[in-house]
Image 1 (tube, rainbow, N blue to C red):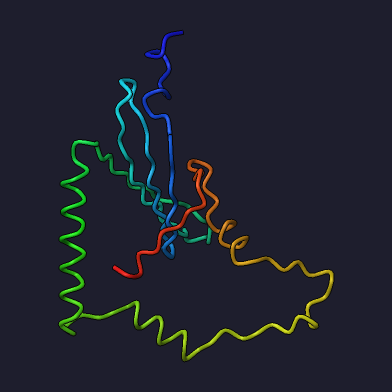
Image 2: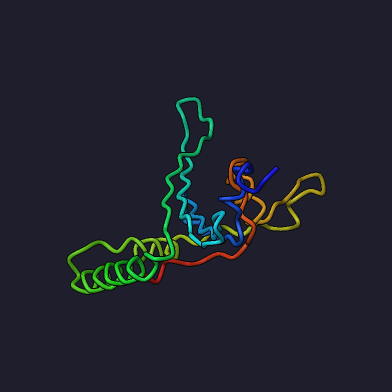
Length: 151
């Protein structure tokens, strides 16, 4: 079979970065076309719950082609710089600062390790967040996380 008969060839993933942000996860995937050109897909996956409490994910995907990278980057940087400028004016809420102040005022209760029985399975934050983000359609090939809190 030729390369052109293989539909997956035009979407071969070369690199992936996963960014977790609350109920949303962003995937930045570098892929190649049949013609050996590179492009990026940016996928937003948002965790939702239906009325029965079942988890489902809604996804939105952008395709960013190499010839647009510089313009996209310029627009992204301009927009984030403007947000920083507007935040400095004091006219807008700062949910990051609000969350930090809340967390400092309400530290998590420490679990006494002696109270945890040997029958109880204790899972790390990483294990718990992995279970929360079960998404069979998309597995990240990289555990790299990027923090957008500074934007």
